[in-house]
Amino acid sequence: MPWNLDSDRPIFIQILERIRIDIICGKYKPGDKLPSVRELAADAAVNPNTMQRAFAELERTGLVYSKRTSGRFITEDKEMIETLKTDIAKDKIRLFLESMQQLGYGREQILSLMSCFMEEEE
Image (cartoon, rainbow, N blue to C red):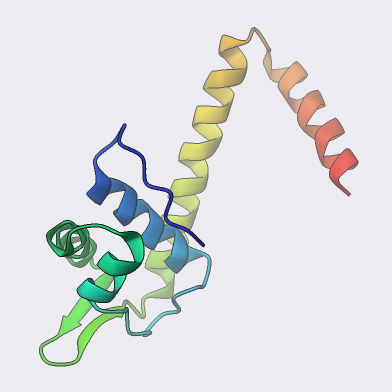
């Protein structure tokens, strides 16, 4: 999947979000080794220092850990990954609801629209 980074937000934040999504979606599984900073930086067409900054933040949160000479690995804490997944989902739902309310929809209208949309998608 292409990186599709935009200039409206800090690049390292977008990289961080992308790697988190890749982890919660299972592209990188618990215990998997991440590609190197240079490899991912080349893939995303960004400076390796920018990628390193995102990796450092992932390590700070515990989602990724380093083995001195072996590289970086995804945490094996499945509960942490599931919690991150739930938190991201809640944020996306919150943004969606705020957008719908700005359009003038109330709770019942939003639920009705969601129900109709989901039926159409089946």
